[in-house]
Image (cartoon, rainbow, N blue to C red; front, top):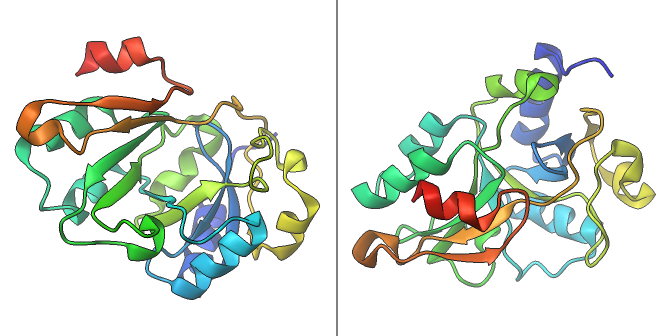
Length: 205
């Protein structure tokens, strides 16, 4: 499988700019992406997954520095944790006092899920994408995540505007870590253990 190219990254950015929905590879499983400011894009994405829009997704950045710049209200302790943990196969639940990216937050805009994936060689070209995306796994609600593009449900493939093939992925979803209480109390919780073991999160924090 050939690595993704700069042209693939440019096509991905163009798709996001026109409220498109894309299937793309991450460091864990295949994902669905749309512009995180677009209600129309989010509605389409959730319809493809057959998932309720009230459920939260994550906002994914392809560069950690861009993520930090986009969330200036994060406290220093939380920022240090973000720097220590990311990039990696994690979704971090962060305080969101500015209610940023509401289409990704579901009904609770005070919490934001953040992803910054590790860009392995096959998908490294996506590092040129500087805009954030609303990201959810490219599977029907309640069904297994896709580790290959061929594993994505045909209805999702047919309904997406762009398909990027990054070859076979690890196939284990990201570990979800709740850092909403980290700034004041140093409190954190693993909500879902996935690709990164809890012991590694604990050692890092």
